[in-house]
Length: 480
Image 1: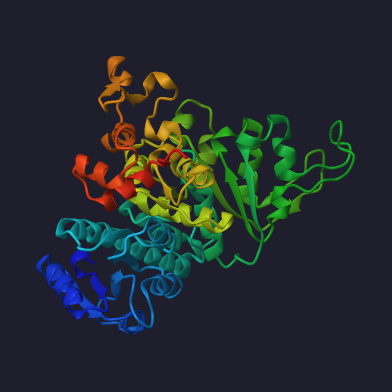
Image 2: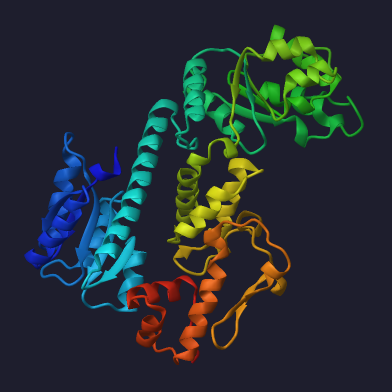
């Protein structure tokens, strides 16, 4: 869906204001409709959501002070009933308290009247992009839930689409599957998706990691052992193979398997039978095998580290997973997915700033999706405000240099000195690099004007709304 096809609802009790904003947006190619109070707006939202032909309303631009049903009530209702709709607030009574409350309720922007055309157009453009991302994510999750019974796999990149197709193709069979990819790309999620879509979904899904268990215990953990098999074996112990009987056994990091384990595993794959360590009785099992490797097995075969016969036995269907650096376009969708996950878990409300999202896009992500998830979890835990900024992300993501030696600072007159430039430049996203200089300029200007916001905004040639936003963004507090 093209962003210009996103319908915009303008809510204002003054018909002249509503119509003029609708005309302005129509000139930019948007489809706009109007309502004159919150109740009428909710009715239009409900009607649009139920229609299959026309695109639903994605953006709501609302006044705050209206009769019957004001803007704040409308924001609460949108958040509860239409979570994919992105609101923008416009008001003639700009107060920092109401702005904070509006952001908490999901407002993407907060503008004061009279509205500057450029500011409105920029706010709408950002809101449309946000709505498009939310809509794509919701659609993909719905498709994944329908196709695979789970929504943990997220991504619309064409490489991931191939992965989804392969999962669907192999899920119904008993065929052995080999998943390849770097650490952190989601191999275990793919394995679970295969199990969830298979006729064995009601049976056990058992995981076994060759790289996480000492070599001396690998065979015992996988095949079990009998009492007295080795020192410390005080009783019979069933292994992972028996636990997975009737279901699916996911063996991760098969590239780390010892030669002895490889030989025994080959027999299980061929005959569906094994003997526990120290035992003589053969155990028959019905197992569907899914295996994963974080190294190219073909290369290990060529060097003699991995058995060739085992390689051909397990490499029946190969599902290669792309690294996150190969599907950069999925980063915003993944980031929003993990943000919602941890906000729900911690009962917090957070959103990513444009600068933070730019930093996420710019990072190389050697740890892949797992590293991205950890970065978002950390940001939700450590962020002080509603908006996650680059400084809330790990230093390796933003490229920030800790300590006083790399900080930009300002003198009393507001002139900037960048020690980092004096000591040599480190590649950093421009949006991230400019955050600290902007903060110091704002702080110097506010202090020079005795925290008179109107005079500070005049001197910096920005409007008061922008100044308030930046004060909040940089966590600048007036000294008591």
